[in-house]
Length: 250
Image (cartoon, rainbow, N blue to C red; front, side):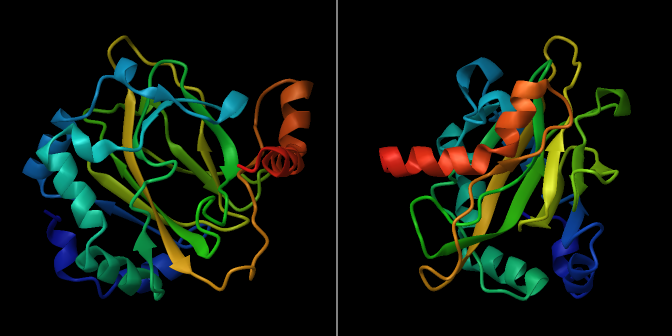
């Protein structure tokens, strides 16, 4: 299933630890080419996917239950949950990690013309497992023949004020990146021709911690663009989300 890179992982721990601007690795040819093609063929149409719950801070579609899309999708889902893959990401990060089987916030992601995802840092504690610490974002891009003018690059930085590093979302390119309180990322609003979309498959790896060790943090937003209302809401989003969760119990 995996490309030739998986035959020798020896250089990846140092590459991950020294990642720019925070720990990460970029792996081109992540899957065997034929399997990547099969996986792409099972991607649903954008209209068949539900809208993200990122409110005003994002415009894309998501489908967490991607394993049902076809045999390649089920095989990829099973692989991400396997001991083999846990060993790979453990070797790369030096930590004992496991992938969320529910793919909360993950699975198939797709954005068409006008799609964007504002700069943000992800939540830290899984909303349904108070002893799961989110450690690693596992992103696989599925965009064939993607010209640079489409943009849609993953923009990463340690501070919203910094100039970001841009990683184009090219076909069969994986990005494994640390998620913490300063791993800001997102992508800018795209202008795409009819029939084109930005496709990816996202998974998230966790580490078991003692419950109550860390204060839970919701996704925190730092939009580059938008009016006063949007930027004010983003500034106070963590507190607003905490108040909502306390009132609703969710």
